[in-house]
Image (cartoon, rainbow, N blue to C red; front, side, top):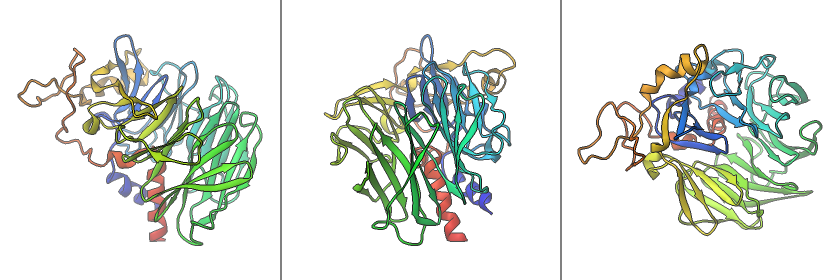
Length: 412
């Protein structure tokens, strides 16, 4: 029953694949996760890797990607039916070309992973059909894993955030809003402490709930609570818990800059900033962002080229906006050795990537071709590309999960 509902929900959302809308979802120093693939810095632009290297050809989910300091990539596909190997929801690559299904991960549905350092990685699970969710840990860069914390019942987690050697995650029971928990590790995920989250003032006794850690520093964590009537931003500071912001939309991403300023994204609408982590205000002059990551003091904003003409921007609390990457920076498919997923799966799909054509004054041509001069005047919508609702899926699988959980509740 649950899988057909998931398919129904995702069919109404964006199809993440070669040929999807030219949209950035998340920035990383090692690359950019986009709706149409993973983009890796190359010699003269961004090299493209298809999502289909780790998903089925008709997958609707955008994989989640994270990179180690040296650029080892892990990709999560939090739905077995949409993973390249239907038994494996985690894939690893040292070069962007070969994507190996991680052995031993078969019992788990990995929803999020985060590198603590080059060797230590923490993962959390969200299997909607099992009772063995919890926290996993790897000490060899994601090659092998062990479960370090298990949760009774159908408790889920959809994000892990690292702040130096500390790791934060939150878990929840879909149909029990008052049983959400915060989990914290002071030693890189080896051991964990758990704190109950008091949501009694905002969550009904019955209903559905999604919980996501959006940002954290060494002592505080900011948690997005998805309720049927809107989202709440919860600050946990030591023993203190306080609601610091309310949105009728979706709080989907966040980060803490090197000055201690906190950024929160309300999906494709508001960019919230707080110098003290308590008082949040919208910052004017940005873009309709669907993701934010920190680069020192800069907020790296991801968005749709249809709406913004570009993919990734840097932004300051003073409203200073600069383009980092545009569609014209996407140069080619990553050159990969024969026999790798990059060559065998992604290579033939490159021609489906709908990059913007140069503005000749005569309208778009088909097939669209890359403007190798680097000049870009925007991205028209491609015929046959159902891209209208991609921004609604920002924040990766979490929003999709929240939606399917709501469907599950209504139809149960």
